[in-house]
Image (cartoon, rainbow, N blue to C red; front, top):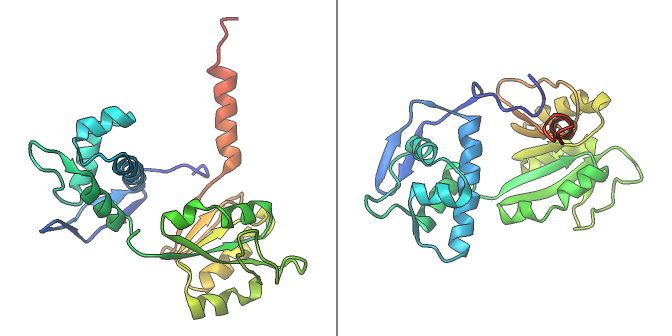
Amino acid sequence: MIAGSVPERLCYPVSLVKSGNKRRVVTEQVSELTTSRLSIYLRCLTRLEQAGVETVSSQGLAEQFHLNAAQIRKDLAYFGEFGVRGVGYVVKDLRLQLRKILGLDRRLKVAVVGAGKLGQALADYPGFGREGFEVVAMFDTDPAKVGQHSRSGIPILHSRTLWAFATRTGIDIAVLAVPGDVAQDVLDLIVAAGVRAVLNFSPGGLRVPETVKLKHVDLTVSLEGLSFFLAHGGDDGA
């Protein structure tokens, strides 16, 4: 599998979902592509709510944000019935329901492992806090960095304290931003600390147990895709 790709076959089982006064047992498996689209719908609904829009149809949502109305209805149908016939979706209510479905109705503790330039930039990104992700600590082995803080005040701790920190305070998600030659060893440390979700910015193929979810963000692959477009999609007619 190419790092950064999102195959349809990787799925999340969903057991029980509540929609208004209706509860529905979902026996299908929900793919990562579906959950990625739910995140897009959530951002669109947030923009509509900020603009004072109270209701929207799937068609209206699709037209305004260049989405697919049939796909919206199909994705939401996994989790229950949200729309009102003749009215559409109540923007505020659907936004809250999507936050619950995505697990964003609670604060999630995030640790960044690797306090280099990328790691510190990620730790200081203000958008995480707005969406319910709290960066609680950074970890590194560099003596010059350990004991310091990021620009926004995130403490940088030694990596050997990761297990004790996770046991004491809990870490929901770890962000891995270390060089590729040590990435697997550091990832093993993260898994041993009981962290079950990892966002990986390090290159190379990494392995985790089936009980741990590993999601890759490969910036080089993304840049190479853009390079391909420039090389083959920007035909100037020559």
